[in-house]
Image 1 (cartoon, rainbow, N blue to C red):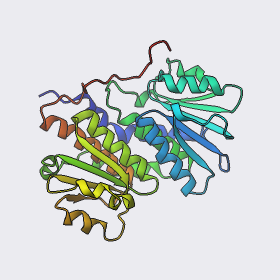
Image 2: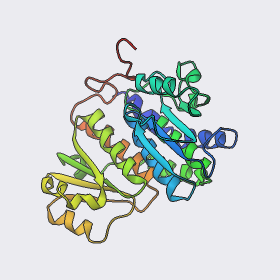
Image 3: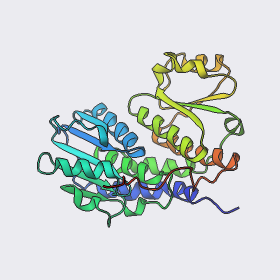
Length: 294
């Protein structure tokens, strides 16, 4: 069987992370102390959430994340960062147009020939991380690597670890579960949302995602022997035992949550194939959302 295109793109991530990190020193990324908002749609919004929490957690300054369609234009920021793989996302382009001359903007895009290149005051392009797949993987994690490098994080060590993670074999027991919940804490909450989205897109799966502590506040009710709960990042005391008491499979890895996201990407593809689906052709989806009349 032909290897899915998305699998090839997932495997390439260690190299694209390194290339993204190399751009950080010469890129107009947020500076320490700036009040920053990060916007995107879908996957890009979840990466924005992860970066915002990471930047604040490392003491670099107030950082908020919004879906581009929900950005509060009356709020005061020193910089707005917009993420768009295609550079054609309607909501992102409309927001950048509205912000022109009012607040400095930076676009991080994959396609250097797209409208996104000229839509913001500054731009960083990651053509090496752009993808043919509808299901986004390496652009998202490469953008996060770029932004994390701008926070002074060691992306080379992360990329080296990802070389092993990219060869991970999905446990058969995980593929047997009909319902999957992804849980994160702090900056990995956004990654949990992204992991759930990958499985919905590629495998049409029943997936949910929450801050880990909120699992007890309702979501726990759906867990049973047909469920799995995947932790990205740290695990609250006693929560693994609570998950297992429902009959659900609990799965976690003691590693950087960005690495666990790669495992979740691999799971999404394997889950899709196990159901006889084509992960390169997700139902109802296109590579870029361009609204009619825009």
